[in-house]
Image 1 (cartoon, rainbow, N blue to C red):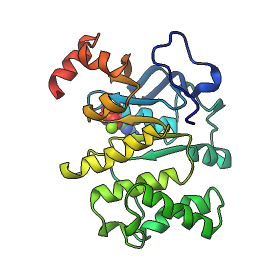
Image 2: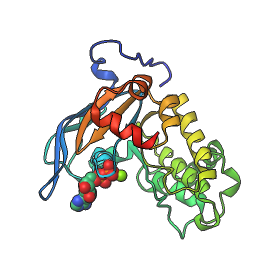
Image 3: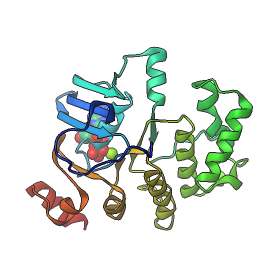
Length: 259
Ligand code: ADP
Ligand code: MG
């Protein structure tokens, strides 16, 4: 992926082949609540997009629609040019292209760290066990928890568990990684060890959508900040522009509360 250079604000849309995730006029309701309203969003290959906004603005729902943990009411979502299928093996395969890391680590408690990182490979990708184990060990090393491979999740710190969750997602060779507030449940001293892994992933060229309140991360890693409020994308901008000079009143108000 490193051969793709992401040009900031080059003017005009990226070539179709560079558009990895495309949401076109997406709408979603929960009963009477219009939780995603006319969402148009394109994430280009190799791009890091940070999504911020007040609680309840629809950030998690946005993430969940992208790997079809939630259905949408109208509009379309394509991943690498393919529309999200409704169900079945096609959906499982496409979903595997989208790695997801949640606030709660969601590791399987009764499986070892190594088994957690092997599972998707053997079940969804049909990789044989030896190859899956090798890859799992390499990924655990990459996120700095290689020595924890034979432990159970509960024996690890929160920061270590979240790094295992990242390794588990990476084991599927995703085309894009979604992070939904990956550090919100962590004790403060563990936040940086997770952000550092994410920074490295970004530098390695991974396409990433990151919901976070970590503004330092947004400033240093993001190509673009997307600000959501009340189910809408209110503002999209390059990080310096967004933090130093937000255009919308909503964003100014939000930033004044968190910075
Ligand atoms: P955020 O992640 O920005 O805090 P969410 O996407 O979690 O926002 O939620 C957006 C809105 O949708 C909130 O008002 C929330 O209560 C509501 N919501 C989220 N999930 C559901 C659900 N499964 N059923 C009903 N309402 C939901
Ligand atoms: Mg959320």
